[in-house]
Length: 386
View 1 (spheres, rainbow, N blue to C red):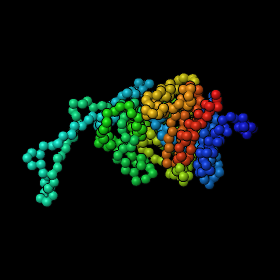
View 2 (view 1 turned 45 degrees about the horizontal axis):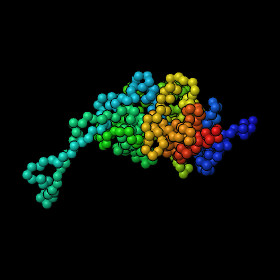
View 3 (view 1 turned 90 degrees about the vertical axis):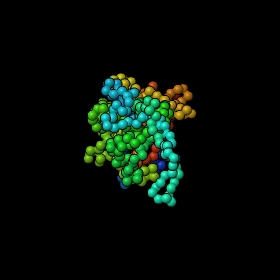
View 4 (view 1 turned 45 degrees about the vertical axis):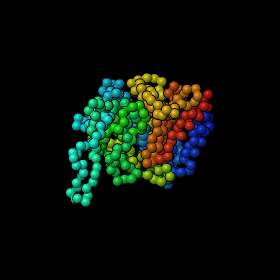
């Protein structure tokens, strides 16, 4: 009966073809979820472990990497709609009182007057060096330009992608030991070099700061906030940052892009950026909520995050929303909202056409980008439906 149903499924042959191309007989599990016309389908490929020819299932756990930042932006939108935070609030207002938030303020650099003898004497006559020292101080006539929370969520803050004080000894996991104290130490020494504008510059560090700001304002751990206001609301009971002992047994073995086993990823201060785990079952719930026809508080929050805020580049049709990217699907103006992520051993994608109420998600236990697979699947579904 299942075979007969699959034979009648017009989407399955398309999904099969894209899945075969992605896996290329390599190690790893692949799950593709599709929701069209109110019908949810989940397809399973590959194998859970290299020594066991067993398909993944709906309760297996994957790392979803950068899609975590989408959830962080959704939390911000939720708190803003409830009046507990402001989308355009200053970062400084949401950090611990003794921690200075980064701002843009130009510096004025001038040579220092050394008087009649500008030579520097190091203490040894033969090491006398002529030089003109320069002193740079903030321009007190310029009002500092603060970083706003919406800048962090839309990657327009000018903050770099990663901090300059990483110290992990694990070469393939540079963020594993980066703590809140490290984050605050970075803030105390960093100055934004250029005026904050509307130029898109992806910043994992910016999302980490956003997660910290949410945690400080709500006086709870970030994971608790995420669970209470988003994951529980969507019924995503198997999605979490910190895995229980039972969940660790359900976490699939990850692989690097060459198919070699990779260790499970670990994050601290960057958990709001990359740290979420999820299952096919939960990702279908997330996808369904984003394209839901019926409206309630959580669907209104999700709708708000889908609104475009800026273009990524002048010569690119990619638009940036809160935690999402937006691209054209066809010449008729149809657009897809999407996000993707990758860790050392996993890759993930979720995308949808909101106006047509359909979408897809992809989960892979291999660190090979799923962007092309996910976006192509959406485009072909659209093309075949015309």
